[in-house]
Image (cartoon, rainbow, N blue to C red; front, side):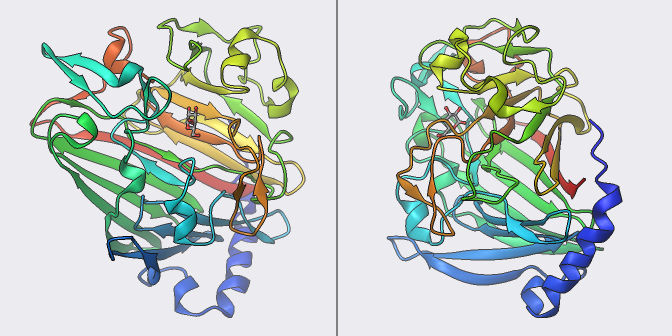
Length: 383
Ligand code: GLA
């Protein structure tokens, strides 16, 4: 899981200097406060803002709507920046049919079977929005809410604290859930996400980020040449509706073995039965070092032509690797190109899907008096 990220930071920083020179306060690094601009209005008139964070040659644009990463510019090995995250040019794109492009996901990342679970003897029915199941928090999850945003600077770090209070019963979930998500971009080109939440009634919580990465640049084609490694010896097979069967299966000898880096495309057309359910990779890997108190390195992504590399470290026990299978050419992305199958991939750190119905999986239940905490760090560099 060695990134060789440090060796390229100087080049990345040089890229930033060039980029920052002509662009003024919004793009300056270091001690300045993140810049804010208007991005659009919600149908009810609420204004949506876009914030710009910079650090280590990386420039990230974040919306108050859905905590969405609307753009993520990262230099290549020659210092040329490209937007490596799929997104839309304007708010209307996000208000339409967005497959969670760049968004914060809550209250529950991934699926809960039939949107139903029993907790402390009470059955709860959630909003069902994906065939028979509840996906990513239901019909109107955290990705479709306007968050309160507070900018900060701390030394050479820039960041945003995003807060949202989800009312008791929202999307069928019990308890008032108070969520704070902190995005920090460091001078080393690391994007750190710290999630925290409290509740006044026991409730499942599983927060994640749904950025679609394409390290060659969004709209440039498929990610099948990207090389991925995942430090996971087991994964959770699913049924035809993408709900885990409960089994923890070894990856050994299957297309799911990413313990040594391999091109995503090498097994993408495999006829392994599990590859047919989601038309590609759309599974949860049980991370070997998962569930640690501090973020542990769990994944690395590398794009050979640009030389861009991204590392993932997390405190979560699982990671959903989704190879953008359901992108079908109907969406036009931020630079005007259509997104087709495989044009972006997600590495969603998480607890396992459907945990409220799977007693053997690590628990996702948060109780009053406890604080939910989770951290994931995406590090950018080149080789
Ligand atoms: C997750 C799911 C996928 C799909 C995408 C959104 O990654 O696992 O099956 O629903 O979100 O399109």
